[in-house]
Length: 224
Length: 224
Image (tube, rainbow over all chains, first blue to last red; front, top):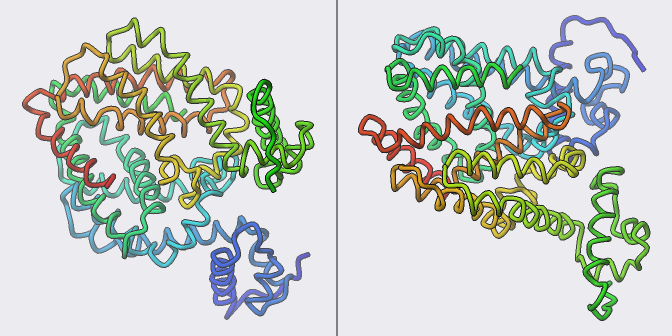
């Protein structure tokens, strides 16, 4: 199937064109009904050329995940360099995710059922998604590490992964959100971040330290 | 399409046979690939007869939801009549759900992607699922109302719906659970119920009452 061409000037643009075309067709025709052949035809490249860049439709989705991840990081950079409050950092990172994801909302709503399938390599919980998941968690690690707030040290170590789980909850709410401009998802972030902030702030107090410890032990065991 | 037959002796058995056959074919061939015609043929009834009982494949899934709900209620009856501790009631109800759902685990893993699709009427969050959701919430209402534990009165009013949301978290974990006998899901229940119990128990203390109030206000606004 491969028809290797020399990669060079323009190859990045071709790659981008193929990803853009694929996302549009997935949205218009559905993921299952869209073939690599159709993507190549719509993008105006040969099928062999399309396969040279992407070995499968899964690889196209992975390229979309990677790109969305890079866009999200770039959008958060100024905030993470400037802001030291935990709640402001977390809220900003979640809000930026909704903002940069907005052009893909329609696609994400339709694609969600594939990502939600336990056996699908494109599930955020799959073994195959480990690298993508790790790079998503990295931004929440930066949220925590750059924060000046006091918190239980053991919780601080686990918090990046827990905040990533929270962000999956935001994604779940967002794919169900039909409000204009996803206003309800922004509101959800506005309401839940201060609650998380207060629980994190209370985590080192004597009355809650026991629960914090048991909670962390449960998290450790259940994700293994 | 309809070919009405007289309902009477045997009609309940025919109904059950059609549901059983449908679930088996959905599991073996996938939900999308299975037609009403194939279900009728496998069940040994006419297509018209199948349509007499179920107007669509969605109606078959709804019948499965209803039956699973009745089985769950029956399985919890003795526990809910006897036990007064909040944690024991909650843990028992969640464990019984896993136990009665076990024969459907393989089907549920495959069907999950349809239920997870935001626009699907079979999503547990859809408007169409409101009656099924309400009857699921009713069992958690009984968990709370029959419990002798002290808790914040406003939280008590909202707790049934929150526990149902928690049970959706258990379902999410369960569809990803490949451990023998779903042992990990039982362990998840064992680890998380005491945490929920302690948070609920602390909810009326002065230091946490403010968070409890804000949490409940957020829940009210976000589910609207």
